[in-house]
Image (cartoon, rainbow, N blue to C red; front, side, top):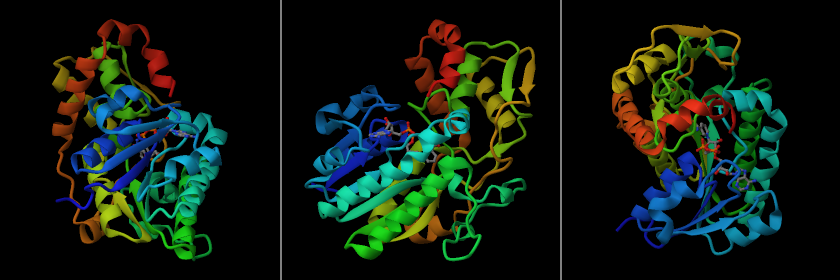
Length: 339
Ligand SMILES: NC(=O)c1ccc[n+]([C@@H]2O[C@H](COP(=O)([O-])OP(=O)(O)OC[C@H]3O[C@@H](n4cnc5c(N)ncnc54)[C@H](O)[C@@H]3O)[C@@H](O)[C@H]2O)c1
């Protein structure tokens, strides 16, 4: 029997892309799963496969009364709710991202009041210093150091907020009887992600046969695209094994260029653009990003199970089965830019 059997679990932001996959995993493991989400970017449709097995609470977790209500009787909180989107969103809506600092602390405060036993926080690779990401240098958890002067330098307001979310959770762990775990999620992709994120945007543009096909930047920037099911497994393992708020990376160590992803997508769709236009005025974030996975292997026994080819295969299949080609073609620009 799994340790999640009959465990009362709250997934904040559970209607999101990553959240909905985590909810599925926890239901399969036997947990009594509750979701709290304001549906600002999450969708109930994401929870359709498990809708009858879970309890959904719709509301804004920046309201303390709602946060108190949904953490009542809960053993474990996975805190994924956040004001967040792709790179364009993060760059254009810094104040929205700043509100995550309030959101995180309200959720922790309510959980502490209600005697929640453990909290697992969905942090981000954006918590890492940006200046070291111009070269291919795998990011190690200890490259962020709260105790050293100048030890932190996060990626935009969104990254600083995630960093503060980490530090606040550690403070709750220090002051209260709460087990804390922190997972720094790297560029996730997979079914149910929206078009504001790189891989789904590349699939959408190819599906709509965009011509010339547009790639943000020169396409030689890299990310360690990590399949969503590998990410949710890391979140679950972190909650099971880490209690003292030590942050752990969840992301593969391979550097994958955007051009390589685009080519893999073309291969899966059996379509090639006649011309590719590289838009060098678009925000691309840091130049190179991949994770050092040593700590995830040692503490969680985590290794990725999906290759890029397997993950793209699953994602393209999901996209084609769930999106109408004419709709995507006619609404491409809106889909790429709206959260
Ligand atoms: N997608 C990635 O590659 C990635 C990378 C690093 C970290 N993360 C983190 O993982 C988590 C999930 O991200 P995602 O990409 O799956 O989707 P997302 O960013 O859309 O998920 C956020 C969820 O929180 C909900 N939400 C937002 N504000 C809320 C509020 N005030 N009250 C209640 N619910 C609220 C949204 O409706 C949504 O369901 C987020 O915390 C995100 O920061 C994601």
